[in-house]
Length: 151
Image (cartoon, rainbow, N blue to C red):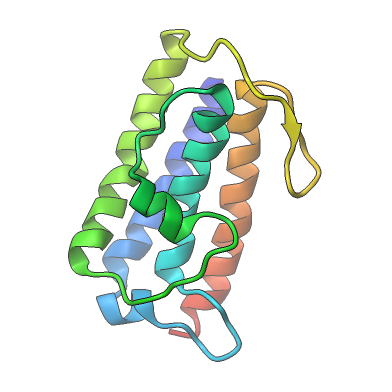
């Protein structure tokens, strides 16, 4: 799993750089023809990782219900986020992954609610969820790359 975690950390480094390189207005801007913004995609990958790995394993997530409600699948930005909220997401980019690695090494993921992802991937165990999360983050990174040209 070390390779999977390395991929996740690299992905999160890219997302953190985006948070540093863009202004709050740019992070909040929803371009014409889009239903979301840079901030939503970055918040979404944090929330999704927690849902895939922790919720799927029946273990309490490390994020608030408020964040889950703002960034889960099917949501869209309802308001501009504040700098404090950006800073919180930036912190969670790394703290959640560090905790996931620690929890994985400590063997806390003993069960998983097997299911098929919305995209059709079989998620049989925590390892599948961690691997699928990397694919999911990559997909959103592609959207962010397109979106950042429009803000």
